[in-house]
Length: 150
Image 1 (cartoon, rainbow, N blue to C red):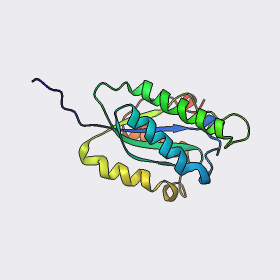
Image 2 (spheres, rainbow, N blue to C red):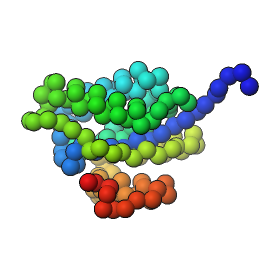
Image 3 (cartoon, rainbow, N blue to C red):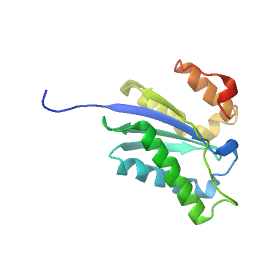
């Protein structure tokens, strides 16, 4: 085959340092747009970005040659710098060091899209910690609760 053809989707989740409520609602749209710009700049395609004041969900299609760890590092670093430069939080804005990344089949993109779209309603009943553990379990990811939110 002379070309490479891919259709790779990923759902990425990461939280603010110590899961503090630092992504103020008045800045969320700008934060999500900035993240979308970083994803586009990498050659990947953002589908939906949404979250709460303490965490963010990303759904995007990424290029086959994309290094996911590097892209997430660039997203977190870029948006932290943007938030700090604009003074949107008192003190220094930071993310927790890790993240969750879950592959999404094409047939499940709409379901994941709606899940991310409805974060506010979803979190009326469940904390981010509960949500994240459910995601790990649903995707069969091994974890030790002692090290998830360190």
